[in-house]
Length: 224
Image: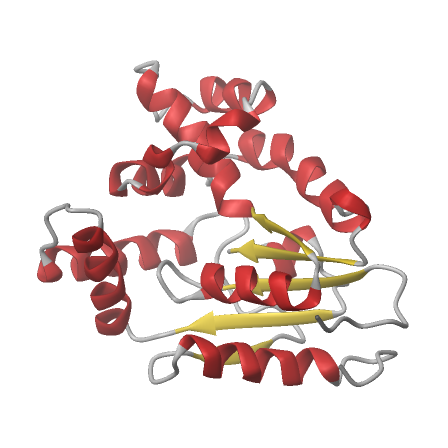
């Protein structure tokens, strides 16, 4: 395994739209570097999943904030977390200031004090480099064409034995992009100082290799 050795705690943020490959990249980097990894979107999905199961109105901002404050982290391993309905609901409640405030401290504590004594933390989501950790050592913004992202999501659903309507999936992805980029609270943007990585034509290994090269040149870090 390789890991940076000169930074006390190295923080890497990876942002990008749905199905851009940021989660896959974050997990692979965390394994290579032996860093702790947090899928920040999973926190919002967990809040949304709780609300869906309890039949709580997703438009009720106070109820959403209360659900975030009392979040059961056990939901982070629930298979339903990856369902399309959960993702759409998460995108909606993530716009609420109360929800974002409730989860902000959780994410920042993870970054500054990674669990398991890890020497670094990797957070992926939609505002990790712009809001959660604006002073991160390395910021990546991962993107891909909507068609490629729809292809990936369709393949993922098909592998799970679920119906995969490519056109519908692409339409949903584009609608979610618009929602995430235009929300009033922490909209999806390319964070200041981030390196944009387009994975449309890249294999997972190629994307990981490119990201590792970026991490390697981070200020104060020795070659990996």
